[in-house]
Length: 261
Image (tube, rainbow, N blue to C red; front, side):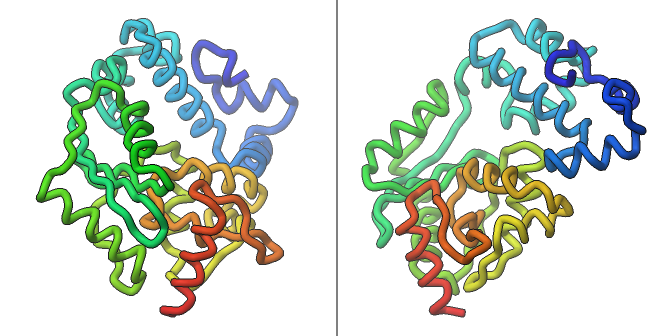
């Protein structure tokens, strides 16, 4: 119903459709999805907006197709939803300036990219060119500025943190994601270096004990390695699960942090 409706159904409409009381339906929905019905609807609308703009649709058409009843309501949320103006997002981020740098560390290649708000991406890999191509694919028309002497200091701080977690990382972050993802990522940042938590424990900490799978999905969607420490989340049996940048890198990071505890 939420995804098929032109406008977001009310809590009462959703509850009546499945013959439950609004209060019980709200609790059940939140326990199963990790989001309230309203947050789920907002995330779905945001996805429709991003998809529509990425396809080059007119902003006004996209706004109403996504269920916004006025341009004013949409523009009040557009910055948080897209990370840039709607017209810039539709055109692939033209005139959006992203500083980036690539360097080598003990874990391989690392790319750090920042917007005006802060670090938007820290990614690890084996091929530095592939990391740059991935950044270009995500922002095909943005102005990417590399080899900036001042920005090199930022990547130096990231590398120092990777090599020695005791140093900490004092850089502003530009964290973009759904409301649920941001809650998960905030919980991850509260796990101290040298400690771990299971996906189930993270779900408990954000007040969504049934959202273990959704927590795992949020970890997999993280674009800011080490600063948002998804590597500190493990399976209930203590084994290491998949890691966006490779299980061996996860093992190394955990071992390094355990040694500095």
